[in-house]
Image 1 (cartoon, rainbow, N blue to C red):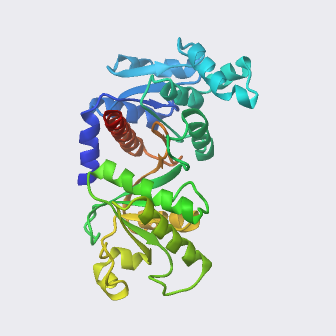
Image 2: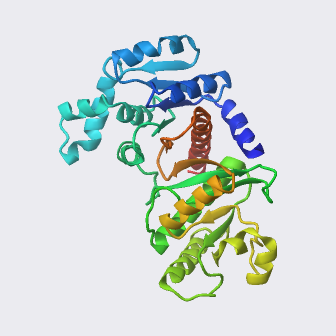
Image 3: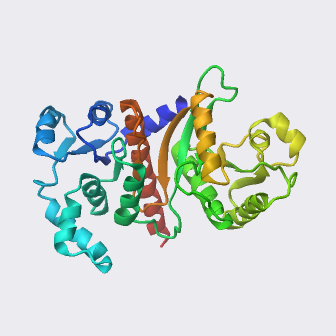
Length: 342
């Protein structure tokens, strides 16, 4: 669990504010309280009604934890005006903008967009589709990025795991059937995410049912092309493909199937060719392999916003708060670095 412990420690060193849009859910409340106890982030809980707000009365006594109800918040007018300015080209009038701003998950995303918070999280109750659509529409895509994708951070820490540590599976939650160009962008984004979260060098495997031309198929050709594009776009990254999972994960198999592989069977960023493979693969690793999965974590947004599984625990939400905080810290670092360069 060392990678996760490091993420939690790093988050505790920051002073970020994370918005939880489903503030009345007991799991969310518990995660918010735990996050404050551990100093991981300042928290805003968004509730939808007077009854929910009353339910959260005790939380107001916790330092660094705020309760917002859009219907009574002093910020709602400002956020509605912001939403109108962003969506009026789509025919949204001021009255409609106000109605959107009153919706908790939209309100949460607008808080981030307006700079009142550093990241937001939802999905413990709401569908992933609605959380992600709102994040893209309100928070928007990062400059220079064409694609929003997702990844799962996996932690291998059980006795039966032959290799301990962290890795990333991508995309296992969002992009259904990426083109070669999109697959290359997912690979580069995932490598940067891995490095940001673990402070370790990424070793990227572009996965397929073929290793180095052992099979011929248009699906294999897509991964081969994506590998070439990713290498051209990010020559500083260690990328190999196409590889079967065993050739990417087991050094002895890599020696047999791809003896000249620069990652030598020690990949830590696994790029799946489509969502079928990614989603099935991550659930097998989690449910049969016993690995701890955090995600889906979104990448490619201008500010952090993340989705939760509706089956999540309070601990899962706490870990997502830490990851969202870490994303915000690294976003600030990169922005500052860009400004210095300019």
